[in-house]
Length: 449
Image (cartoon, rainbow, N blue to C red; front, side, top):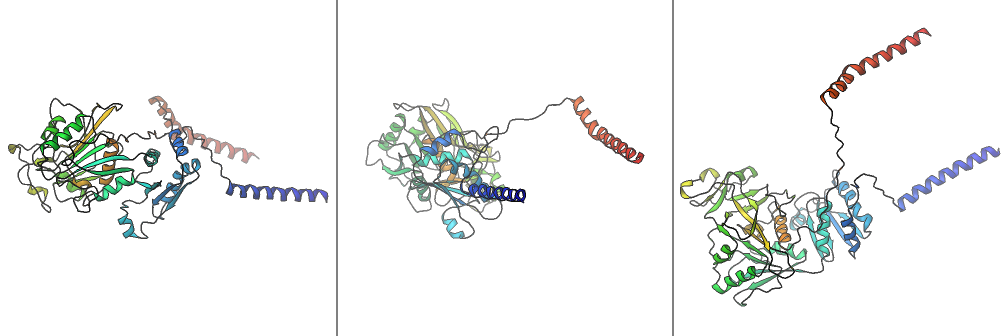
């Protein structure tokens, strides 16, 4: 009787212990990464970044509940939650309110928005490098000061007209970049405290003193973003010469754009990019309405890198400028008129040693189009994302978090032809003969019994 009672008590204690362990597992989690390269854990730079950020971080994912996308995102963000307990993740179904999602510029299923300290950033890819770099940009207490040239009909960073940059200006503000307007007609010099000067398609040629003020700013080591359009007379010939660039006549016509459903041949669609920090791991398509081709002057005074190119089916059309609705077949290449066949560069990133004290590198970007970030076209493909990459590079924020994606070690086995023949013979003949022989041996032993 006592033995039965002891056994019953042992069973009850065992069940109670199992229930207690199960209850504690719901209250206290334990995660251990046993992978050889720690592929399921955050890197040391990301961990230090999260530990330095004070205050809650909210991550919003616009992912549909169908499928496994939400689970994938939740498992990935869990790495950040394990380091920072006040980092939260919530999901919004983009199908629940399509109009609100369009107003919020949500373009793909699973798009992520990071919110911290009153600012936010959007991501379309799920990787530690992208998320940690975005968090580091949001954590910066110092606002970057970007001046937009005004007074000659330039695009306004806060304007609501189709040609203005109001939507992109709001994106810059969310990323901790303060945009100000600069009228050189009222000041004789570009301020030294600017992080970047933007020239966005002046409609009237700048006066001589204004053009010289911009040239002086560049010679003093200032960073510059210069956007050009076809037939533009901006009075900045001296600046172009100082930057060693020349604008080719006409507009780029690209027959390859039809493959993306674009009927206007003067709209250049790009989905392959040259090798540069701005284009690194960027795989979204972008659309540029009627860009102009750019060329380098020899010898160049800067270190040139192309960041935007048309396809091999393109040329700079100098005669008939195509209009919307015209097919590419209606516009033909004519080398006799000086037209140049593609691929053609229409975006350059340039660097040189900075003359500014304490600065290592001066950066300039020249793009033969300003429409791609306008209110009319910013929603096309990855235009907004490419624009933010350009600003990040110009503001030296292109290498904020360099995280190498860990990968499993190469376990490839190299076998000689003889070894492969032996293995193949063993599987095709040896193994079946062995199994048949063992079966026959077992059958004979059982029969003798």
